[in-house]
Structures are given as structure tokens and as C-alpha cells.
Length: 340
Image (cartoon, rainbow, N blue to C red):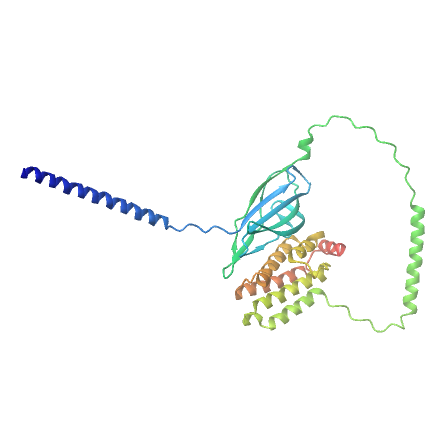
């Protein structure tokens, strides 16, 4: 009887040891799983970008609409950038913004662009950069949206056209414009002679000729030197410095290239200055980067460094210097005079 009891007691101790080992393994797995759960995950962006094009069928040289929808929460500040003349392989013809919409506690900002492409085939259209931040945070760039756009060729679509066209109707008898040219030339000569006689007869009544107005680039250089002497960078007045620098460049572009738009937004101002080939592509890019950075400082409370401010001042001076009369080629000057 004693031997049997001792054997059962040994079996009980073995069972307890096995239970303790199993319990230790379970607790170790639980703590390991909890440690894995605490591994940090990348922060998701509070800004989502969705883009689409219409119509579905786009042919070469045909305008189409590219729409960008930026959705975010009300506590996030968003800055949309606007290309000056091109986006990807497409030329910008027009653009605009739709009123912000509120859906499910989120704000959706919509911007549309009218584009045109001249290269058939498949193209990747990447949305312009979008920056965001919450109060007290630095600006971050939201994930961009990439959209595949296919441009069809009209020649490939038409195929081989073998059908004969109908004969054209008779041409109208040409008009002899020579008598009209003679009468017009004689009238112009009489008017010119009368103007010369008027100037000669009234020369004594006119006072001294007023000095010619100062060229826009000289005015811009004087304003830049005056801004430098104010010492706003050393005082840390970056917003006032960028605002004054932006006004100098805007005023110069208005008087140099005939862009009469003092109340335009930066996007509208860049689009207006790009019409009619007033500026070279390099100068448009330099102007777009400079004005976009100025807007970030003035309106998005971006705090630049002293080096950023000096670089912005140098970019403004370089833009005025490279686009001043005499430094541009004669064909470019003719384009500016024709557009202005």
C-alpha cells in the first residue's frame, strides 16, 4: 500500500510541472504578440487626391478636362500648386476652382484644368504637388495621383480613305483692289501732311519735352535696392520681405510685358503672363517657383530661413536682369511688342 501511494504522488508532481511549462509558453507568446502589436505603423496622410478626365475618348489636338479632387478634414490646411503652362505632356489652356464641398464631415476642394495634347499614345498624368499641415506642424506633401491618359491619332482612326470627293463649285471672280489701295494711300498721305503741318505750326507753343519715362527694369532694380537697405531679413520680418519682393516682381511683369492684372491670384497671374509667348519657358518656370514660394510665406505661415530669403532675392533680381530689354533676342522682343 505505501509503494502505491508513493507512485501516485510522483505522477501528481510530474503533471504539475507540465502545466507550469505550458502556462509559461502561453504567457511568453502573449507578451511577444503584444510587443509585435506595439510596432509603429506609418502615419496615413489625412489628404486624399482623386483625379479623372473627360471625355473618355481623347483625340490629338482636342481639348479635354482634367479634374482634381482633394479631400481632407476641417483641421487640415491645404495648399494646391498650379503649373504655369504645362502639366506632364499636355499644354494648359484654361483652369479654375469649384466651390468647396462638405461631405461626411470632410471638405473636398475641386480644381479643373482644360488640357490639350499633340502626341498620340499613352501618357502618365501626375497630379500637381499638394501640401498640407495641421496647426503647429510643418508642411508635408500629400501622395500624388497618377492617371493614364490615351491620345488617339485621327489618321489611324480614319484608315485608308478611297472614296472620291465631289467636284468643287466655280470660284468667285477675283476683286481688283488696286483702286481702293490708291484711294486709301492718297487719304493716308493727306492725313500725314496735315499732321506734319500741325506739328510745325504749333512747335513754338509747346514747352520743353518731358523726359522719357524710366524703363520698367530700372524701376525694379531701384525698388530691389531700396528693399535691401530696409534690412527686413536681418530683422526677421520674412512675411513683409516676401510680400514687398513679390509686389516688385508683379509690378515689373505688368509694365514690362503688358499684363494689367493687379488683383489676380498667383495662378491667374502666371496663366495670363504665359499667354502669347510673352515669356520664355525658363523664365516662366523661374517666375512660377518664386511666386509659389512667396505665397507659402504670405498665406500658409511658412517660416523661411535667411538663406531662403537671400535665394528669393537673387531669383527676383535674376528674373528682372534676364528679361530686361537688350538682353532678349530681337524675335522675342517682337513677340512682346505684338502681344502687348
